[in-house]
Amino acid sequence: MKKLLPIILSISVLIFSCNDSNKNRNKSAVKEDLNSAISVPVFDPDSAFFFVKAQTDFGPRVPNTEAHKKCAQFLQTQLEKYCDKVTVQPFNALTYDGTKINGKNIIGSFFPEKEKRVLLAAHWDSRPFADNDPDFANREKPIDGANDGASGVGLLLEIARQLKEKSPNIGVDIIFFDAEDWGTKNSQNETGDWWCLGSQHWAKNPHITNYKADFGILLDMVGAPNAKFYQEGYSLYYAASIVAKVWSTAYKLGYKEYFLNVASNPITDDHYYVNKLAKIPMINIIHQDQTTGTGFVSTWHTLQDNISNIDKHTLYVVGTTVLGVIYED
Ligand code: AHN
Ligand code: ZN
Image 1 (spheres, rainbow, N blue to C red):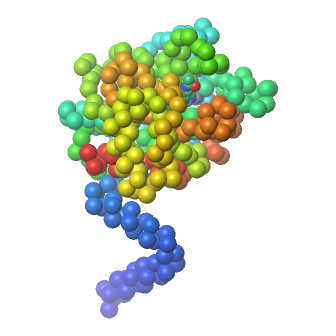
Image 2 (image 1 turned 90 degrees about the horizontal axis):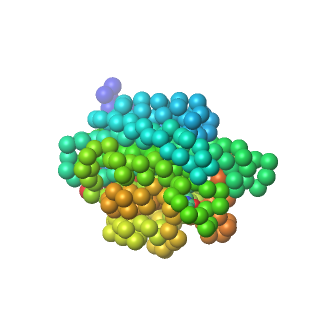
């Protein structure tokens, strides 16, 4: 009886919690089945959120600032905990407004010797000016970039933590690109490649000579509530089969409300240069919104892009999808 009691207790707890909310139980039971069928580790949204907040707690991660320097150290330390190899790639660049910046791409690799590999990326810098803020007085202030930057990086740190727990069959490289977001204030009719300075540098000078990956996934703005991910133009142009693969995984997991089977405008983002210069087919999972006038969420490049507007469920949906892609490969 002494031995049986805990078992009986846990069974009754189970039964009790099943009755509690049958609908939710069924949903998560299906997902658990799917997860265990392909034996995928479970993405922890609380942990991902913690990683997002850890970045915004430094303040805006604008190149040449103390917060930027401190955050670089934090990201390197985290990757060193989880990855087999970490490479920091420093570079210098000139921004459109004549600022000389010191940038750092931060790269964590799992199984660097494996031929078959996937590249996952997000940008870790934040924009030096909230040029889309409704209040003119804020437009020269730097942004926290909780969604625009930190969400993708936080999600990837949680993926790194999971990869350490349960080794994938393929090699994985996680790249945190710097200096994505110092682009021109009027990008409509711009000439020159002013966005994505870190990915441009990396694509011309990969951290490993002859670096190859089968495909890549970029995450940009993956933390807003009720996010919608359309099939972005350059992703379809350069890597349509990868879009199909990722969206199909998302559908199997039940995320069709997030991942829409609809094409959208091409966005000049880090994946564009990885495709064009490094010739690696890379897609962008990016939250677009045609109702706001900017093409992105209303908090985009405003002071409202802070931790209070991050939704753990969106992080969970995207994180679970990316893990699904890695472990089914
Ligand atoms: C353009 O607006 C041309 N590119 C936006 C890329 C970006 C900025 N993603 C996040 N912030
Ligand atoms: Zn931005």
